[in-house]
Image: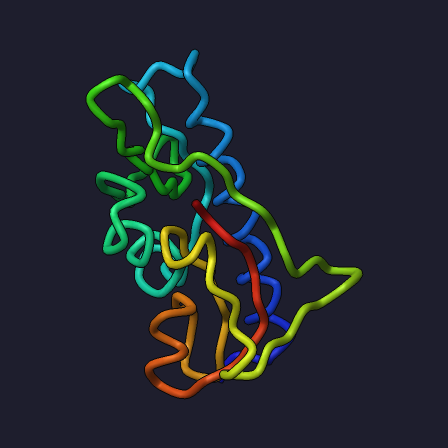
Length: 144
């Protein structure tokens, strides 16, 4: 079983990767060139990509291998006017200042128009899923 410290490190890596994906969401970005980053099996299966796809913020994601390195390629979602589905991403919990919330304290992002990503005892999930399951945890980031 993985240690809590290792799991927390992977969760922070997830937030960093989310930031890289957001950086790819600027208007000058070529949508044919998908943002990518190194990954382990954890990020592809249990990380934030499945949640971002379910919530409609990314079009698709695909694990790949380039030059012997595992890469997670993320295809961002764009509207009809080439506007990105992700307009902003804010990192909440940082290595120097962890932010933990109880199940009753999970904030709503823009009145429900955005999502937040939490790491809970049952894995990485959205704030909406954590509220349904009655779980609190570390508030990693907010996406809208």
